[in-house]
Length: 180
Image 1 (cartoon, helix red, strand yellow):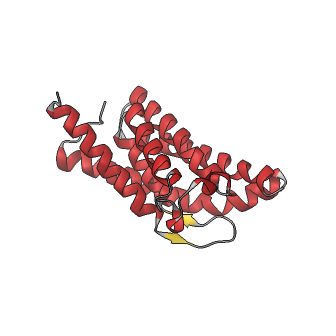
Image 2 (cartoon, helix red, strand yellow):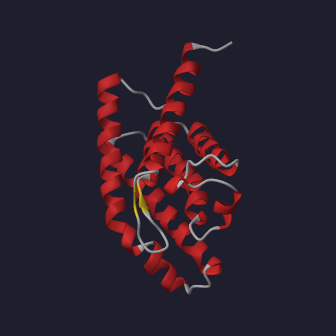
C-alpha cells in the first residue's frame, strides 16, 4: 500500500527527474564537452533526496536515455551515447548523487553542508568525466583535464550556489525535509 510518505517520495523523485531532463537540454555548445545544467539538476537531486532515491533517479535517467529517449544533452539518446567522449560525465552523475547525498545524510542540511557536499560531488563528476576522455579520445590526462574540467570550474561554482540557494529556499517554503 502506498503511504502518504511514499507518495511524497515518489512525487519528488519524479519531479526532480523531470528537472534533470529539462536541464539537460539547456546547453551552451563548446568543443567536445557542452556546458549544460545537468550537474545543477544532479546537485539538486542529491541535496533533496536520500542516497537511495537520488541514485534511483539518476539510474532512471540513464535508463531512459539508454532505451533511446532523447533525454541527454542536445536531445541525444541511445546506447551510442554511453561510449561517446562525454559518457564519463553521465556515469559520474551516479557518483555525484551518491557521495553528495550520503554526506548530507551524515552531516545534515545546513547551507555549509550543502556547499561542501556539492563541491565534492561536482569535483568528482568533472574529474571522472574528464578522465573518461583519455582512452576514448586518446588524450593525455593533462589535455583531458584542460578540456573537460578547467573550463567548467567557474560554472560549477555558480551551479552549486544556485543549488544551495534553491534547496534552502524550498526547505523554508514547504517545510521540506530531505526524503529519507
